[in-house]
Length: 294
Image (tube, rainbow, N blue to C red):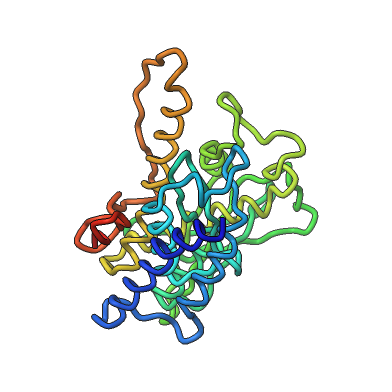
């Protein structure tokens, strides 16, 4: 088993580490002073050794080496560390993906934009909310709330603010219906489900989940409205497409021996505009015997 892990590590962690060093030498990527890509990959490797797929099997045995390498590369290029809860490794069939948490999304946003702060608040029935719209953007948002209005069953919306280094403020506002539509994409949400199941995370922690959702929307939309085509942004935008594709592939594999279902798959995500390609030279990482396909 130790020999097998050593081989997987050689074909994934070591390959990615070498590629990251190459990016640094070419000046394509610069990490924050407090971020060590080597330490992040060591943390990720420790986590991966105990990560299981939905069938309780080790992902290092069931997932392809290419997908493991690409998941690690996505993590490192974005300057994230799973030990800080900035993302998670999730297996969809034989494909491993690195899925950012909202902490990770905020970290990338601050790194790319130099934002000073990112915050969110919930709007309840009875709150007073005023704002203006200038050139299609919300400005001058004012929110007045009474303590007695706070009730998770009376949430009507939420908003997030990104305060940039020059003092400019970007706002994202979502109604509760929009928030629930975003939640409906979760695997924990039933096919015909319209509201949170009693006792679920979305129900018990509705305020926090609403804030997380609007923060994710704000960060993604603000970043995608910029003209930044950097390495970081290519990996940032890749995640949702990779997850959507992996989910479909896993579902097809599960139904391969069952009754044929005539269905069309459509990937719809109004929060992303990214490419499904992994990296540089528009080729995914390859760990095949012929060498890495960078």
